[in-house]
Length: 324
Image (tube, rainbow, N blue to C red; front, top):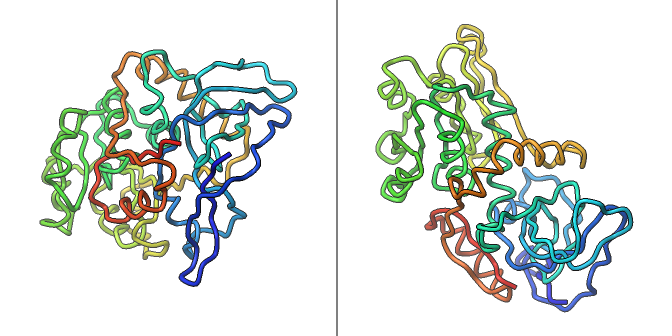
């Protein structure tokens, strides 16, 4: 089968399209014919210092497609079922997936859109609900709001009954279309680098109950200043780096919670729990179209390297998808 493989080059890691042996599903796994594979920022970061080295061969970590074979003991799926999943090695024509972390694709959801669901929507739901404990009527600030996770978080926050939904970005014009998805206030980081003041103004001086932070290093002090008393700051990305300074006095005075989340350190059973919680609470909203990914652009699988370069340019809104 055709696959995009991570290889060494004189300039560092790069991608090559190669013919490789098709995978064989093991116990509890399904073999999926990949219809579409979405890109994620982590695809670019595998070789950066703040990501631990991993034995990555075939690139990618989420996809949608059709089940074509079953491993021993599979009970949840049958050949012909449409699925979407977190799946290492998804930049390929076929991939094996543990059935426990595969989700059924609703009939009304195109497979192209479904490929953009697993990472962004599972991450956003887990951060808002399980880690951030968002309650009805509470305000939320979503950093990097034009990203796939950011857009998913906007949509999910509205479904969960959030009050004021705010999003930060350095390109306010690019975030404008997200008002149709539930974004109410845009915090323009290009015009107001001290975003805590903008958040306090938009919340009547109270601060926001919840912050989803995909930036990481460089914004912690402002996150603390922008948070309401007993607010929660959920760190789910590190685009700005992995280190920062922490004002313990402000953390204590406001009784704030600083929470980190990651799928990389979770067991298969823990990831399966995230999938089941998402299906139970938001599956119907995905089926009726209330939740729907924004697709920025598609590329053929042969152009995976160009797709990643397009992502590095940071000019897109939503997800970039490869089509095998």
